[in-house]
Amino acid sequence: MMEETHLRTRRQTVKLGLVKVVGDLFPGEQLKIEYSIQEGVFCRLSNSLLSHREVRQIAAALGEWVSSDQPVTFLGHEGGYHLYDVGGVRVRALYAAEPKASEVEPFNFIPFRGGFIVDFGDVKEGGEPPLIPPERLSEAYEKTQHWLRNISVEVVADVNAYVDAGRGHELLGIAEALQEKEISDIADMILAQRRALRVLLISGPSASGKTSFAQRLATQLRVNGLRPVPLSLDDYFVNRADTPRDEDGKPDFERLETLDLELLQGQVADLIAGKSVQLPCFDFVRGCRSEHGAPLRLGADEILVLEGIHALNPHLLPEISRTCCWKIYINALFLLNVDLVNRIPTTEVRLIRRLVRGEKFRGTHPETTIDQWASVRRGEYLHVFRYQEEADAMFNSSMLYELHALRPFAEAALGRIPDTSRHAPTRDRLRNLLGFFHPLDDEMIPHNSILREFIGGSIYFDGNPSPGVRPLPH
Image 1: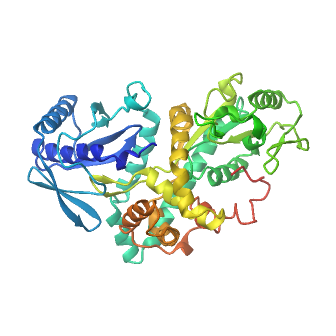
Image 2 (image 1 turned 30 degrees about the vertical axis):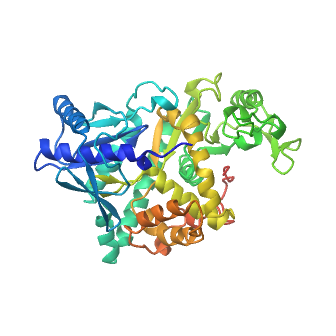
Image 3 (image 1 turned 90 degrees about the horizontal axis):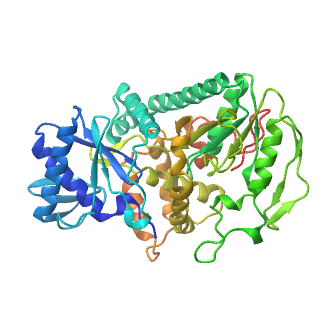
């Protein structure tokens, strides 16, 4: 079973050693652990750029610390943290580490953007090639971090201060305005490519807000005089009896081959050529395709929109000219750290979103959601993340206030998991994380917000879709 990076205690030990050696090498500076990059994390100094020589110094010092096999002494829990003594340095960590410096996963250092990536390159789990730093993903993070600096917000306590002062609505308004501007900018980029563009492809991992984003983008495209036409990939499923199987013989619904690629590729090509097609319609009750699909023909001002986990996979539409396609990758790249060295993993935020949505709208018990998470994450690694750099644009669906708003909903869902459940440790971990966030009244959140996809009250999901825009697939 796949284990999340932040839950691997031997990786957490590397982080503790890194805090110590950076403090020793650069007195007066502060290490900031910013975000994950595939199987690694990007780090930098809070106020200075690092040269390649200095990165090599840090890597060498960390290697010496590991070889020293010094004890990493657990001092207890304090304020939601694990507290450790690392060679005389007290370090607070959100997640547990090992008791000795030598108990680490192998790692490499890669100088990157004035900082460095600590890459764990999980070769034992699939022999992936050496990490190639994802420039587009990094740019998306850096853009968000630049915006946070503009409003003098860096850690969770900064947002808590706004909430406690009754000014949470100020940050909420700024965060929503930023997303609207980003969506508008993407619509303008699409308009600039209008002459050749016929197909818009949107992909992202689970609970990234793809559907709400697609609806809001559709509105902005209509403002620009374009008409988005959704094409549901769900209707192109092969009959359930023909679904490919995994190594255990169970149906593998995450694979590209669950789609009738020949039919999909042929119909998209016909639509681009101006021909009319009879769309398929998949009957999920019977597990097979119905013969009652609607006819479709693209008008001159219409753009076909495909949304799903495989949308950026170049094998989805291999014969369609790249100039006809425009690709968008969306993810909830959470903006805040609890403190400079304790980042909040994006996967935790998406799991919380998924728990809340499942509880409120899908009748899914929180234990079932957690049960499914490992399979969901495996599918993301295999079918989503590896194609993210194919995107023409990236969109960050996370908002700096969202865990403040999600906290009451998430705590209610987690409260349904009993102490006897095997998922009680996950329940307690997420509760502890949510405890850092002061609750924010969700009544202030606009009804077209992406967050409404998870907490309810969305104009796109509560029986009142935008005029003239057909609902895009969930």
